[in-house]
Length: 148
Image (cartoon, rainbow, N blue to C red; front, side, top):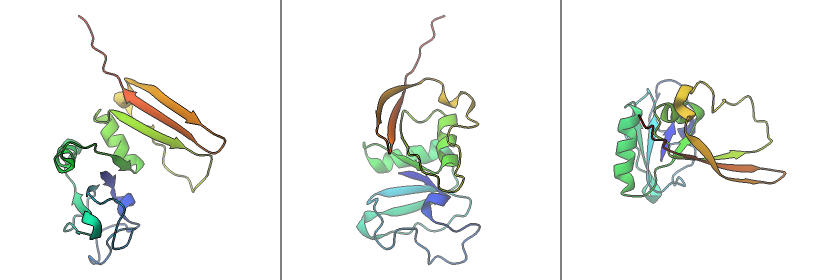
């Protein structure tokens, strides 16, 4: 999994200490390597359940390569937040997106699909399931070959 700093924890700015291990306590729900984009590097805390948080400021292509190697053939998920997902979309590194849309206001939030330029070109809706409480949309990247 790949996430941003805000998905790891509520702290802003440099680390004051390394006591904070993330939102989830001693046994996070991931049970695999998690790569956290941040400008505030720290040693990778290894947690119960085989979760290791790797804090990195490397380019998205490098982080995706590292996450793919750690996943050993399994899917790599990009868990957010919005700024991290936007970086991967702009680099056209996301081949499938599962968006969950719920009519619930929680503060202002961030607009996921803003400022992407051509980063969303080539996606099509592969699936949409809706209820009065939530809509699930799966978008897939369709590569279009241009003939000359």
